[in-house]
Image (cartoon, rainbow, N blue to C red):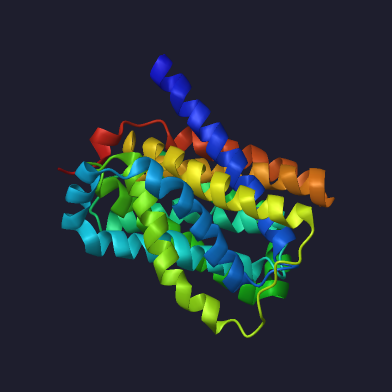
Length: 292
């Protein structure tokens, strides 16, 4: 019972934090370029996580998987952060979080095709039900109006899905150390983005922008990622990524409360489908689904 309670607390914390991150990203990119935002976000997360959670014993283990850590830094931090920040210039916070919710479907496809993970009809039905909820959220006709930023978001969701399988295979490394190394690696690979931005960086922002940046760096990027890695290593890539179905709901919630984005009938119906998808995808045992 205690283990189940901890899992659900992790799920709620991560989903509300990541849902809020899309709202803050949408807010911040009105003042800061996506290139600058990604670098600052990863720098703050690295500043918080590195000194606190990486120990000598962790470094010894991570030296054996350096290529995987470099890959994680790119596809689980630098690249998707940039793709979502760029898309936030045109899409609402709710839409960003909705498109991010396609990650579990990508995770299932990748796990089956590349990592030979077994699956069940119930699991597939749950993921498809959740995906239907996402489609109801956004509407096919609206996707066609903003196709390029939508494609960027889907690419970001694919990056997250693929990185879940890598994170799961590195479960011999302490969760906090793995999360910290991923953010530091992502920061290193995002440095060139800073020099690709033609617009000069300025510190002349309102206090609200500074607070939003601090939240993005320390909470949604740093602390929340540790919580997610802990949850991931306690389950399986597909099961853990299914919590991302909750992020659209929290993203819609934060967008409605602070940005005035509308909540209508399709949002409610989409939420019900998403919750049903979460229930279906979690009715299985990870050890029964993963080949040794």
